[in-house]
Image (cartoon, rainbow, N blue to C red; front, side):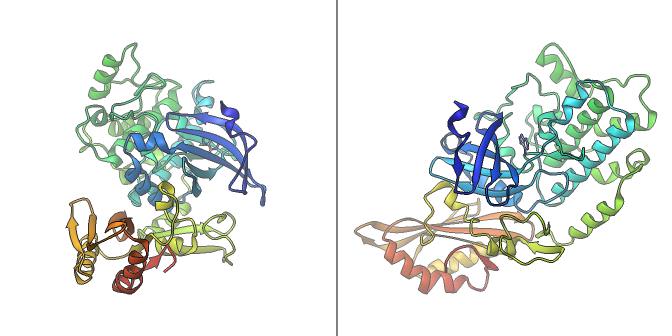
Length: 437
Ligand code: ADE
C-alpha cells in the first residue's frame, strides 16, 4: 500500500522516500528536493476524502494563513502542490522524532521541561498573534529537530486534524481526548486561543511528571475529570509551577490565564530567550508581515536576491509565488478562469466594490453572509449563462484574499468581461494579483 508513493518523483522536484506517518486524510512521507538535496516531509492528502466531508473551504483558508506563519518552533509549510486527486504539503523535515518518545522513558528534568514549554508557548503565542489556532495540540504534533528544539507540526491545518470525524465528533485514535479543553469536549463553541492554552497546560504536566493529569480507564470518567479540572500534582512538584498549572488548567475559559500572563510568571521567564521574543513582538506590528530567513525560501522566493532578513507581507508572497493559486488545488488549474488577489480593505468594502462592479457590468448579483458573491450574465450563450463566483477570505484582520472564478458559461465572453470590465474596476482595491492579468 505505502509503496504507492515511495520511490516516485513528485512534480519533477521531489524524490519520495519512506512513510513517516499515516492519518485519516493524509500520509506523510520523507522526501528530498532533487535540485538542492534538502530533506522535506510531504503530507499527501486525498482530495476525494476531503471533498466528501466538505472541508475544502476551511482547508483553503487555513493554507492561506499557514503560509504567513514562520516561527523557529513551528514546522514550516514550504509549498503546496496539487494534482487532480491529491494535495501535497511540502513541509520542513524534522529529524529528531516525537518529543514524547523522550517522556515515555520517564519525566524530564525541570529545566528541560521548561525549555520545551517556553518554545511551545512562544510558538503558540506567535501563531495566535496571526489569528492561527492549532486546536489539536497533542504529543504527536510535537517534534524535535537535530538541535533538540521543539517544532509544532500541523499548525493552522486543524481542518486536517485526525481527531475530528466527518460528523465533527472527536475521534480518539489513540484512545484519549486527554489534551482537549473542557469547552471543546462539551462543544459549546470555543475560543481557539483558550483551547490551545489548556492543551499546553496538559503538555507541561506530562513533561514534568511523565504521565497524564486526567487519566481514567473510561472516557466518561475522563471527560468528567477534565470538565472539573480534577487533577493532582505530586508532592515533589515545584510550587511555582503548580500555581501556574492551576491557572492554565482552569475549566472556565474566560478566567483561564492568557498567554501574555503565562509569560510573566517567574518560573516561565527563567532562562527564556527574550531577545527572540522581542524580535517576534516587533513583527506583530503588521499582522500581514512575515519574516523569512534568506536560507530557506525555497518556494516563495526562488530566484530572488535576498538580504539577511527580508520583510515580506501577504502581498509579496502572492506576487512572488507562482503556486499561490489555491483554486488550482481543487480544480484543474486554469489561469484564465480564476484570479486571486489580496486587498487591505475590510471584507465589507471589498464585497461592496465587487457588487458595484458587477452591477456596472449589467450582471445579476446574489450576495450571502459568508463573504461570497455570485454574479450572473443576462445573456444565454451556447455554454449557458455566464456565472462567476467571488469569495473573500480573511487572512488577518488587515489582509483579505479575494478569489474570483468562472463557474459556468462561455470562456471567451468571460475573458472579455474580465479584461475590459472586472479587472480594471478592481485595480484600485487589489494590492497583489496572483494570476495572469
Ligand atoms: N512526521 C510528520 N510530520 C513530520 C515532519 N515534518 N518531519 C518529520 N517527521 C514528520
